[in-house]
Image (tube, rainbow, N blue to C red):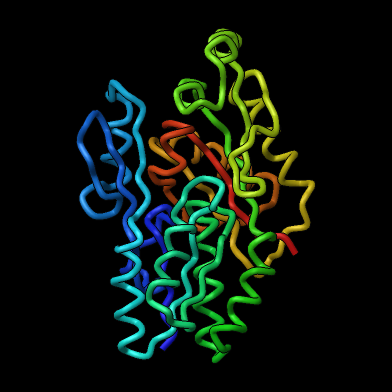
Length: 275
């Protein structure tokens, strides 16, 4: 049996039947350690984020966490495809490689998705469809490696506070930007979160996001997903603009703690697949 493994940075859940296994990432908030998706929901995370005295710190799963999963798969004769959080953002990928080497089992396939949150979720859905079609594990890995570069995301950031706290903006830039009402548009590029545009005010920022979207040849075989962090009003406004521009969207998705800590509440985003 081919089993799909993700870490909690993928913001997936087992109930959807897409993934088979989830390795939780630990989040430390003001000295209290939580396990994302186990005793920390996304809504609870954002509640704690806005009152936290210190910026949350994440801890990658230990190699032992992977060893236990890999040994169980080895004993059962299962094949594991692990769709891992971007290696540019975490050492999780390296930890999984170490665990695979220790278990000494060839039927473990580890893919650096160079993505995070629902980018990984889209890749997991694609892998599940391939499993259902009877594609071999090796074939699925090859197709996922090719497909992952086609998954794109743009997100509008409502406040600069968390980009500053996370080390992605200087204090001076955050202060000036906040006074001027600057709203960045960010994307995930080469496995990292990058600012790709800046606008003054939310309306202009949303229009900038739509202009970015128009530069892509979107694959209509895959849904366009609106996304949000905490608070859906901005996302609902974006959905209305997308609809007015002729885009059909699927149900909105919530962005979890791994990216949410760096962009904060009020984020509105769009996730799509290129041809």
